[in-house]
Image (cartoon, rainbow, N blue to C red):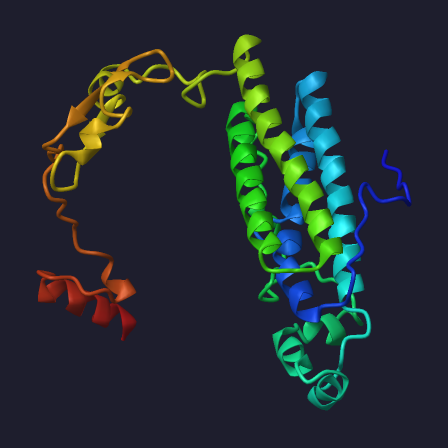
Length: 289
């Protein structure tokens, strides 16, 4: 059961309207790494979680918080669109530099939503449910959640340098702080899963060992670049992070199978089949006629 508290988690009020920045802010609302994505991702991971208790609560708590962030950003975008000029002539009459703001605004903000935010990114591309992942494996999902928070924080940090509005910057500072918490939170949750003996690397840990394939291929770094710079990396020698093998450096990758030679395709599909006997083609033609 959800309930809506009318107060915002943090103030979302700009010092002045700015329709051009409203368009940019859409990215952290409805873009691939925006708040709509993480809110739905965490909620679906939580709803699908078959493990009652702290992990399910963690997912649903932070998913619910992210819904509040959606509302904050929607509110900020709507306020940034207040009194925006609806024509170039109106923009120029209000401010000699208003033409730039008008040109940088998103017309869909006014045509589609009547001066409100959109479930879309900064280019107007609609938000897509395919952006979210809820695999059912908590270690796989938590690792992706770290990435989602890192990408989201990166985009908010970039937006911070695209505005001079004090009110906007205050809200962005709050979001940056919460993204800091969330990155650390998911990293802590990953370690907790391991400590609780529920999941470990590699994902999925429960899959049976691949035998000689793991021995030969599971811990070998294959270098396909000239030189040996990659050999200096932590991934090329020493114990692997999963504690189950030792990295090896392979400086001469080799093929493990001969060149594939495919048989002729079904002539009824009219692909180009080198070496197809004329009798086969004629047989097909005869059947068609």
